[in-house]
Image 1 (cartoon, one colour):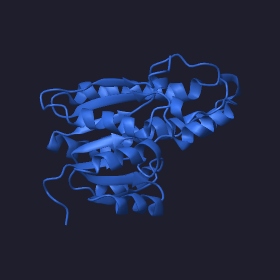
Image 2 (cartoon, helix red, strand yellow):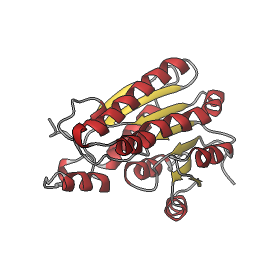
Image 3 (cartoon, helix red, strand yellow):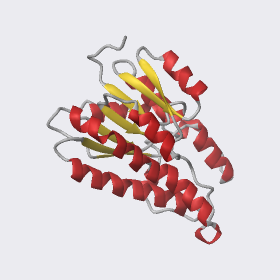
Length: 233
């Protein structure tokens, strides 16, 4: 039976990478709803946590997301961490399908899930944390336009949500630099660059910033955080 004193936190993208690190970090003293697409990988994370349950759905599918959200009866925080990378093509090379693929997951799915759970978050005076990217801050280089456009859109969405829910739900945007994850390994390989894990943030470091946002005193809201490796320019 779930301890009623534990805050209920939904972490999307929690089966791997940054999302998993957040679930593990918060799982010490929260009840975690482990978000992911594949039931078996989600269950692995659930089984490793003291208090957790699966939240399995395809966030790019409206009906799947709506069904999963409708089963929730309580929520104290939503950590939007699920996302995908872009192919790295230039604007001239990028077709509509790629724009739709990235924006659907990195922006539209985030907005829709947030909409669905907002009534629960309002009731609990809860938190929304958007795990964005340094690409939502910086000027993109060649081939970075699609991903950066999605992350800038997510940043704008977050700013609007913060003002719309101010005084009821706290909204934080976290922008990590390069993080040592499978996704980053793939991105660097496609770019033909050598990969050095020690030159990246650890997922656990990003998870610690999420905890900091959630544990801010009740009269305070951490609006935006940029987290970079100490050696990254």
